[in-house]
Image 1 (spheres, one colour):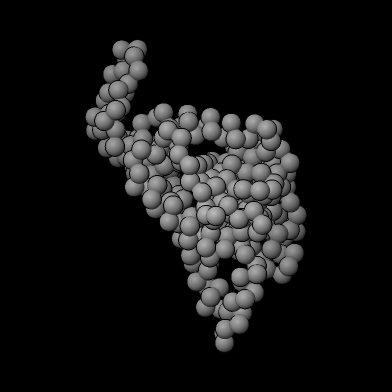
Image 2 (tube, helix red, strand yellow; image 1 turned 180 degrees about the horizontal axis):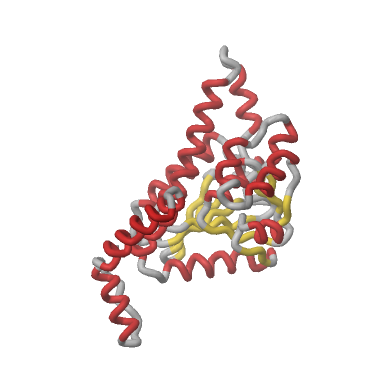
Length: 263
């Protein structure tokens, strides 16, 4: 049984974490499988959107604490192993945002600690009513410092700090209010709603979405004047794309664009 399953429907790739007995924990194997699959998708020009979900009763419960405990057997009490783990996990999270295609988290059950970080890292997220989100490491004496990076870039700082210091969970509706997810839907509609969002994105000009996603994250790190200078040049370059010219002409001529040559 593969720890990560991939199924493509048209231009949408669906990755499903498949370790339900461990609540799809981000074990060494899961992190490697996710990073590898993302690298493959990055080079797959037939794919224009990605859905990430979890098998069983939960999306993802964070790091594999049993593996982390076993790593303590080293002479340094596991320090080198822990640094390697967090570095590999951070690289996988960064790969999601450097991916040319938008990634949508399809969330149910729970998303805790690094699992919540995974939701916050994805470009978009849809969750079922009843889903609970938490950065609850503080409850066992481990402050969720790396999950904090993504969480604090998604929701207001005081709400993020409250979650981090109390270990309390929030429900899907509150997560939507704060901006951690895009919307909360009925559990029975979770798959169809997420697929509809991915399919809508997949109809757009893939090369334009690619440059737009890259620019989205880059400009967030810039002062506003620099951001306008940078994004202005991005738009100039985007206008030079022949498929963009075709899209504009199609709009003016009131016809569907022919983007069959898009790469």
